Length: 257
Picture (cartoon, one colour):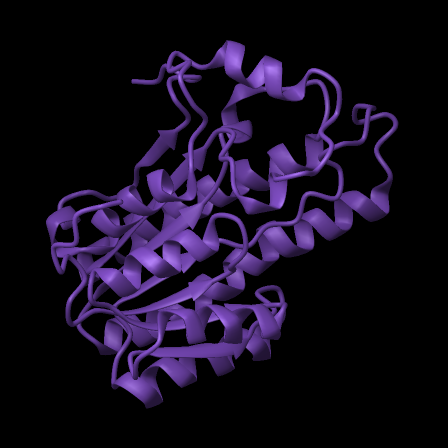
């Protein structure tokens, strides 16, 4: 369990996307003192997580991150409920081609289109509508959950990897364009993060073994808490001189300058 320091006290954060990693993010942000709007396609999940966190500092919304009006509404809830928006973490993803065996030649274009619609267009929509609200608040911080697939190269899941690379390009654009006006933007690139959705779920042959073999840390896989610890820093004033960075949380799978 982490040590709570009040890192996000007085911050208003919109978390777009719950589930495996997202639930851990929500817990950490709430424990660190943030006022939260949490949203997910699964509105019942958002309500359950909000109920678990409790208190007046959490609002749950139904959120389709790839639907512009849905994002506009979520930003509006944050500003109306808490008076400002200081941070946004875009954490949703679509991985329709994650377990397809082929490469680009065999890739179904409907899977490609859906991955890009959610993971690329959706991140653009979130940035487009969160940034003005943050500027009205005097600045803020954005974190994207990306993936080491953005730069590692793989023989499969080409649309997923392409979408994650696009998210990093958007992150750098935001940092450059809006940094002088007080907006920071960074990305976290997780490796295999083990969470409740994997429990009891059959995995393709060799996936777990291959993932462990690639890690320098062999004793365990990453957890949502590992991602949340870094994300809380990046959204906080303690991270106020960090921007335009992609930081891997992968147990040493990647070696990057």
